[in-house]
Image 1: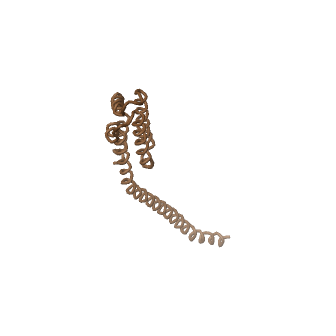
Image 2: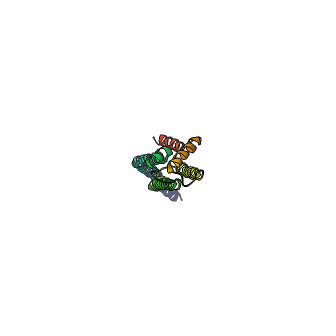
Image 3: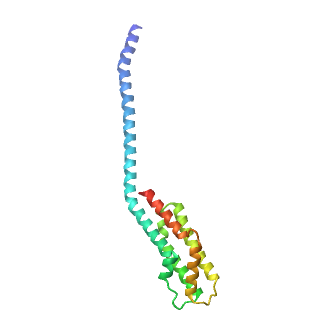
Length: 177
C-alpha cells in the first residue's frame, strides 16, 4: 500500500508541473493569437479608412458641385430661355436637374443616409418650386418670365433647401476630417 501511495506521489510530481506548464502555455498562446487577430483587424480597418477617405472626399466634392449646379442662380444662368415659352423652359430646367441628379446618383454610397436624404429633398423641393412657378404663369409667356418667377419664389423660401443641403454636406465633411 505504501508503494502504491509513493507511486502515485511520484506520478503526481511529474504530471502536476506538466499540467501547469501546459495550461499556462495554452492560455498564453490563446491570448497571443487573439491579440494578433485584433491587431490585424485594426490594421485592415485603418488601411481601408486611408483608402476610403479620398474617395469619400471626392463624393462630397461632386455632391457639392451637384447642389451648386441645381441652385436656381446657377441653373437659370446656365440654361437661358432663348425663344422658349414658359412650358418649354420648365421642361428644359427639369431635364437639367434630373440629368445632374442621375449623373451623381452613385455618390450616395459614400455619404450618410441622412445627408443623401437632405440632398434628394433639396432636388425635389427645387422641382416643386419650378413646377409651382410655372403653374402661376400663362404657359405661352416667354421663358424669361418663368426664370424671374422661380428666382422670386426661391428667395421667399427660408432657408433655401439647396443652401441647407450644402451646409449639411459641410458638417459631414467636417466630421470626416
